[in-house]
Length: 234
Image (tube, rainbow, N blue to C red):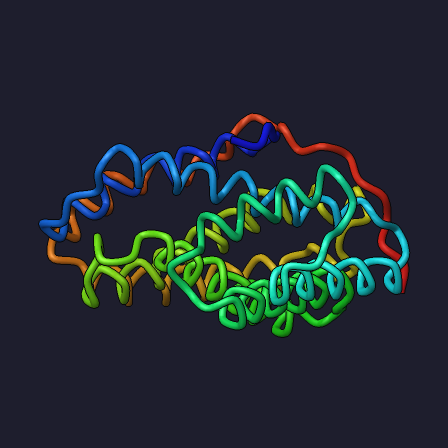
């Protein structure tokens, strides 16, 4: 397994995947549960490499190199090459073109989140960013999950991303990681999207009360463990 730093709430979500699947009568074995935890760690480590770059052109160039390496297997620098090898291994059930396209979409959404000054565009990018990460997770899960679970998990991924932003958006703005103003308008838009996606998620769940009980603990902001980063340039 590639050593990496992972935010506690993301690792906890990955570790809870078997319990979520069990609400749909599905079984996730220990090996798959381990792979899902590794996936979130690898994916965040790769994303963090781009986050650390101050210049937008440099971020775009590295994102393109990562997507190309995933698509055609070309080499990249040492530590990142090991992380991409782990990502290729974990997503071996899918076509390289599909995996690389998911990662490209995630990077594009992340760049919108950094640079937009429009609250509505920011919220839409939060939702759009969840989709490729969800797709990769379900790709790794493979036949262990079914269509009803996949539909609910897609909404859960959106909810999780919205909660993360509701917790972090002021700090992200203070650290210069985003350009949008983290005021009442943005928080209201994030909260409205959160309520909407929660309703859709619960409608799709066979055990909505159990899902609420499970998810309630994530509403409490975790202790700050975010690494400082530089202000992205336009």
